[in-house]
Length: 227
Image 1 (cartoon, rainbow, N blue to C red):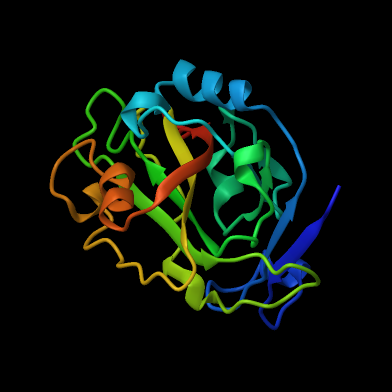
Image 2: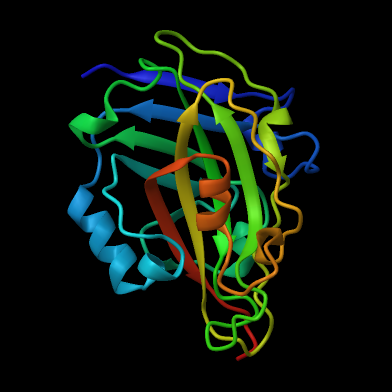
């Protein structure tokens, strides 16, 4: 199995990153072989209504692994994570899980990872939905070896999930999008509704506008302690 690895590296080590300011952190990305299954990803997204609330039907060609290094919490297709555990940027990996995924970096692909909240202000009253929490873009895999990528790739700065009190559990959805290398992407005009001005609008609109395809997703639940 061919293994590709690359990292976004800033001047600090990972141990320093998790306690440092937003402007100086380390983020690690790894691409490798098959993990997870297409059916398990689809089943989890459908069961929790991420499909169709956030995404249209799609067949995952990549699995997306997310970990918050400071708290040692990982995102596992719908697990509960305390709000205090997701206060800083996560580390992430994405893995080809089907023939369609191919070899990362072999066909001029570029990847974008986003985080969105479809349950703002609450799942019952999503008047702020979707809320854009993060966009990291222009992620490309080298054929061999490793390379460093500046955090200028962060198109929208990480906004820690902070669901309001008494609004129940929110779904926080990571979506991996695929485009072409060198593609210039425009940032959303606003975090709320991703700038589209209508509730339940966000990733779907932005991906279509920027000609990006959904190739993977993962999500977790978080809620304020006061319920």
